[in-house]
Image 1: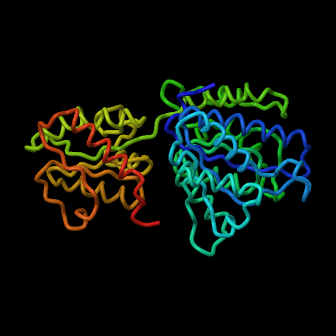
Image 2: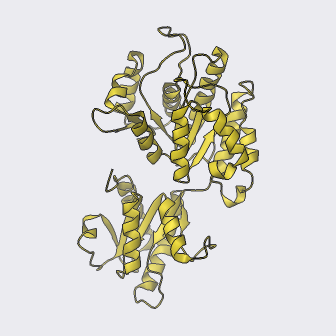
Image 3: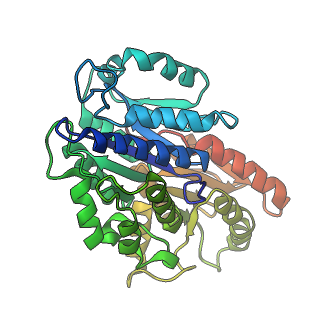
Length: 384
């Protein structure tokens, strides 16, 4: 089963199981992850994994189930990709030097093949460090949605990181425990909290608002007795109800300024359709329902949590430059545009800028802007 709700999104998959958990429950967890990840990737989604060791319920017994799900997820993603043209970066692996050293010998060759094919993109934390916290922070910065299964302190920390950025957290209720026997209940406890406060966990579109508890209830694994296909279908329903990632548009808004007509035409005819084709929800203050009684507060709240900022500096308006600086300071993904002839300030001139010609062929402008977006959207933030 494919779902449009996964397309274009990046899903972090994380969790673990306790050695004390029943063998059947752990194997159910692996079957569920295999089903879920295969569906995400075959539906056009991408996954983020924190790779490293693969401890098993019984040390030294390769037939016993693994206590982490990362390698099962990687294998499921690779299997889904075999049926299509290789998709560059469909799998993002977060590693430290130490965790890379811990990759199991029987997993190394498959991992190298995926790297060689360009299917896996690797993000390393700082050299010499093995900090699991730092790996989680990198993974959370990259991903749009967290899918959590079992675990303890690690998945609880991930939930906090995602919620602090107003990102969706989907915790399963399977009673797996944690491989390190830590935390306050992991995803099982988070699932209970989510059902009572769904808006804190699920960022739903207006059409699905108010359905959070229903969607979470459908995700129940019934202690590992619900068919994994049914749980997968319930996850598809959650994904289809999610709000699209927001793209905040910084631009000239004053109709009395000479450049306004050209800027308005550029956004309506070129920027809006291009962002829409990439699956972004366009945020432009004054063009939609007000969410705050004070427009300046609303501007910076939306900028603070947006996934992408498109900043057009035509007219060199001070407010646009301030908002651009805020987005850069927040390490948002920022795309800068300007009308041909705009003189960029010294510091901004060092940032790639898409210069557009007023009245230019709309089809060509859309094509060129899309290429610019694809080339620049992955640019690292100013400070990491």
